[in-house]
Image (tube, rainbow, N blue to C red; front, side, top):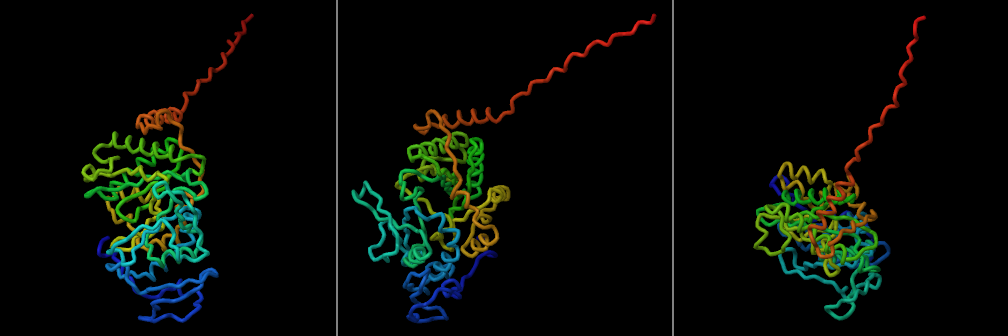
Length: 378
């Protein structure tokens, strides 16, 4: 982010936090903001602690401001998380300190926090995943310093059926999100040939992510090989820019098309989630027009958004990711796709292109004109 656009955050006011009824007096105050307070959120009692603690040292962004952001963005965030098993990524000491993933819901959780027991082969037991279904749960999760929110691609009630297929485009330095924009546009165009719509969002870190909503009967046994085959196809056609293998030695100045996220055991950072970077950047839905402009101007800063900017965008544009919630689409059935063969995608594209070609229209033959009979002069 250029110096002209660097934002400095203050510790007050927490407008959205102050709107909640306080059940008890704050534990203490500093600079007008309480260190801790017990509030009521939609009828649920919550104890918020260490609100003054700076978790983003470079930006001076506090835990209270993290909670505040999540409260404000909740109307568009929650529909994308509801019903999906959630993995917490917690940073109790801040973004520069040690973090940990938490799949199993903490035992000290309030009894109103909904969980979903999902069988874990690795642990040989059920793991109780948090379901981020409502605002009190979101505030509770944020108060745990879970800066990042990582939902499953599946709903808990049908864990083997992904609701979407996802491509995580990760640039290897010195490549940036500019190069990811080019790869994202190629992906968009390929899916368009199959008659499918795709939606981009920033990762909130260095890259770009492309989502293709499905919401139809499918499985990871279908989506993962398809994603792998497509990544390999892009690698074959654009060897100078694309790689589908995760080896870091192969990724210098190239874009990794990470297809492996399409797995029941993996998660991808959720839309509108903060990222634990130097600044409070957000995984932000964007328009394809914005992706094209980033590529044209070759300016990676055009696709970097911090918390306050995202709130402004939501106010002006609404939820650009809303179609991902409900749009029903089916991946094409392609011979050989189960083996992740890129040729299967190529053949499918050829068939799709042929189907799109206008059929030559038959020239209508004009009816033969009857020879006009000449009148003979008598």
